[in-house]
Image 1 (cartoon, rainbow, N blue to C red):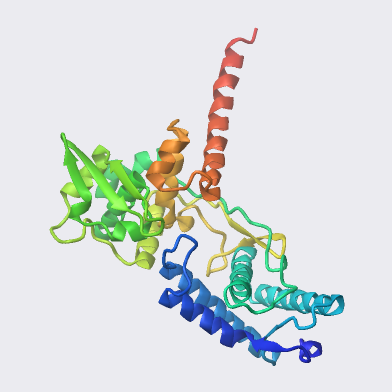
Image 2: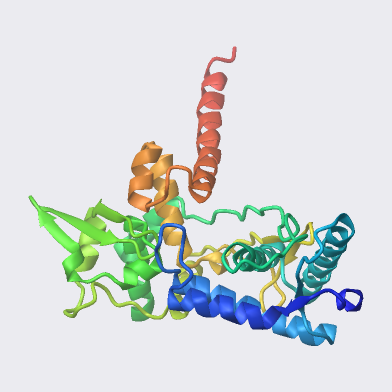
Length: 352
């Protein structure tokens, strides 16, 4: 596949990427603010490395990083041609493996970050890859519960109808919806995170991802959940994230949220439907996961008219966060529907 470029002085791609991952693990390579990289980021790097290993076997030859030597136009065009072919073949390989644009884009971004590190931090003269390892951003739909959904979950009669394990899932889910925390932050909570001030309970925590401190006044239903917690260092019982997500889907099924909504992703620029392991379309309950708690908190507050800067303070998003802006757009759709409904009703009352 890349035989025409073997005359160019090159580095072994996988060997150098191993060094990149090792530097990221050890803390030699850090975030721009000096903080160590998150464990999840390292896991993503290792996943890309594994796929690249399989891609190398598929190609039947070693993956290389060609270095610029002569600094003339002919060589520069040759390097651009190499990276263009690399990107083309690698993306097509990912698509044939069934990956969608979101994951393919993450793979390409990781390779871009790696090559930038090789060039800017290790001083290798790598050229021709700039602007190639990217994909148009796909904005995944925001899955969040409405106030009607939450109203059902808060009914004591509904909770009483559930098995004990699903009741625990319900409590943890509602507590997550009240606080807007990531699941990793929920797992880290202990009794020390609760402060009682003048009859009110506050949850004070520092995000493991952003390191921002948040102070949240707990609503009545969240305080009631804490009243029935068992003694111990953990604030609430936290099953593994995978188990929690599985039980959350059962909770949604028990709530009757079984309408078909489908799950769609972009693949090589085309919108395709993703099916379940049984080959069926996704129901709303099938799409429930731990991420829904945080999304529900943010969208509920925005839809209730809470100013964006106040919601960001609770969620820990930066003022220019693209992720937060997606929630704003999502909540605006709901507001538009309510506005249309109100004014359409007014128009009907004035019709002669």
